[in-house]
Length: 266
Ligand SMILES: NC(=O)c1ccc[n+]([C@@H]2O[C@H](COP(=O)([O-])OP(=O)(O)OC[C@H]3O[C@@H](n4cnc5c(N)ncnc54)[C@H](O)[C@@H]3O)[C@@H](O)[C@H]2O)c1
Image (tube, rainbow, N blue to C red; front, side, top):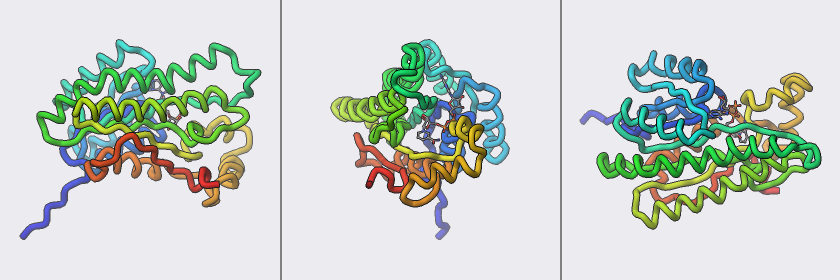
């Protein structure tokens, strides 16, 4: 008898925000490799198009790129409609787009505070609010489970002296994810919602530090803070996203998955 070699998210449709580079790109590639069709959205459309083109080289028609500012409610409505048009629905939403801000409490301007919350928190709220209807419909039609994966940060659980805005936004994403989980469960939508909490991972988000110390020293400096001794790789997070996106995690909702090299165990 032939053994069926199915991907772990075979047949699912996923939307990954901020997918032009870094963790979003790694998650999009991983989900596509495991059988999903992926809509890759980003303010950086050229970057998203390059990732989609590279995925389509190996699996033609598996990826589309969409222009998307996650702070814009209009954009969310359009991007979800374009995803439905391209692939027929949505099972998995990865709210990944985000920015960092390392700045002292007294130095942060109100504008910077609002900007960080607009992208890192409002963007996640808008995504959840507008996607669940389409996701519930798709789950019903296909019988495959729905999953929202919100990329928070270990900074949403442990605080830093110079990260007030980022700590605040990422902690809110953690709790928002639980509220969304309970809402979807109560409504029996077939959608789970969980948050992922990475520690330092080698992506362009670390560029400010790399510019200051050079890559090797910057990564080593951060790695010394992590019990496992190094910073992480994008696929360390992509595997967590894959697990939560797949039906392997069908009984997991409202959870927080820390992928942090042990830092929060201290
Ligand atoms: N890399 C890390 O060390 C780390 C650690 C913890 C959490 N995170 C979180 O992981 C997520 C991804 O981070 P990354 O390291 O890949 O960063 P990155 O800077 O490499 O990528 C972020 C992507 O988001 C996009 N983006 C920014 N603003 C946007 C907007 N308004 N609308 C749509 N797209 C937008 C960017 O264009 C970029 O492609 C972020 O939410 C970040 O806070 C990263």
